[in-house]
Length: 81
Length: 354
Image (cartoon, rainbow over all chains, first blue to last red; front, side, top):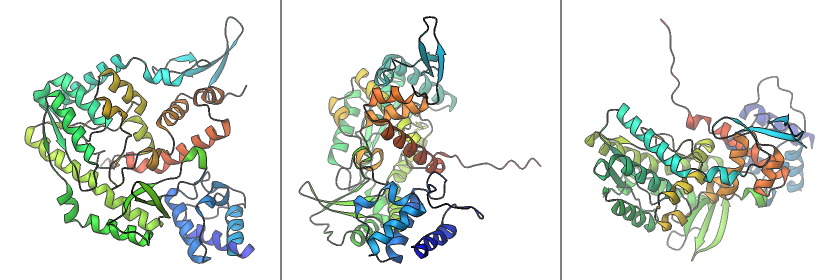
């Protein structure tokens, strides 16, 4: 689980509007903190599907599953089982 | 009582009044605000103001008349009517600019309104421009790699976003395949395909802009835009496409106000009833399906309430939505507004001061 979280964090550091030195807590909102925008979200979904070889059903494309590090990590853990 | 962004004052009767700014910018008691009434009121005065604005701008630009792209939709029908009322049919020129994927009704309704107003018009199909850039082929390739079962012989296509109010899903675009009027498949678009697709699709509106200016410059006319406030706030127009015009009379009028104007101006009922659409997909895709994600009367009330800082409970009473949905919708609107700042921005100028 920690490995997944760190992987997503590294991706966001390299590919989002996250400023250097920003400390991102597990429950912080990625959209409300301006870390990803609508295109960034689509790119993040692509990254998750490719990296973890998963398909995300449409009904799981919810803000709860994608707006925080914890939500994303939980989603990947569930789908990668 | 929860107050969001508005003031509370004690009236002489001792009642609590909720103060918000109305359309004229004055502070008024908003506790009984009926947003739809506000948006539907004084269509006659609004029409007069808009005609005055159009006249003023055309005069300031020293132009002799107005060119309009007539799409068969309500915005261009209202704009055309106002221009004819202000300048006379002799000084207004209509352009029907269909392409291969346009709905046949767009051309028919566009021609009808021009003829009913006695306006000279011309049909200039833009398909050759689109074809010369390989747009249709490239679009086809994206649809094929997104939807493996796609067969152009049997499927129409559409780009859609999930409904906001009922599904609560993220703003993730999907390609929909339609066979005999029924949706038979739906696939998520990858980010790079979505970006390429938007660039390809926007060539349609940008081609129309080129043709409109070709005619406007020949006639020494100005090009009148039709983007309304709902579209402007949400960035629902193409930069240097339908946004590439000389004046935007509707940019401070919500779509609901355009409907009120259309009724006041007695625009063809068929145009009023037709669901608004960018009309760029082989399956007629409404603005509600791709962009608004909710009915226009709800969206406009939410935008109006946000603009006028109406209290949450007034917005609840008006829209019939629960407060958590309203708050989510407002956050969604804020994000869309932020992410489309670039679309609305004029090229920034550097003033070196040397």
